[in-house]
Image (cartoon, rainbow, N blue to C red; front, side):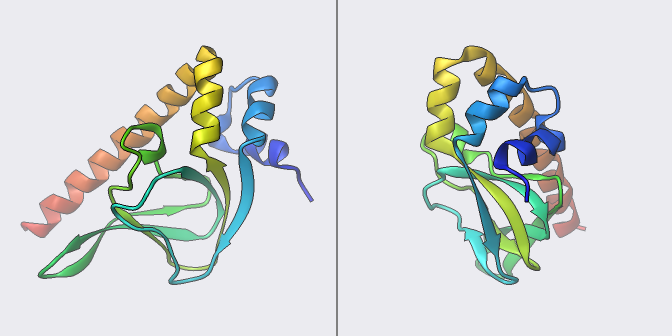
Length: 150
């Protein structure tokens, strides 16, 4: 069985982080499991965590009162789920639902914000990585909106 430090070290998102940063972040991590069909979070709820997906599939959805849930992206192994923990007011902007059994490492957002505030190099690295996540989600949302109006 691998430690959380080892799981983070092996994950693509954390490639290039120094061992001491991975050790710091592992102190904010726990293993979690979501069953198929289970909502991981819902739009408007408090965002106090992000997830490093180890196995499974997760859909990101927006809700249209006329059409119901609309999938805007599907995440899988090696993807990172959640960026709202990083920006006030720390609320989710989408729904996230496990499509099938999903195993992930949950990273406590408040714990990480404190560590990033105390270690600005770590904070800069996290902002760099999450800027990429945000840009990707924005692009996926844009493509879904275009499909809606086709």
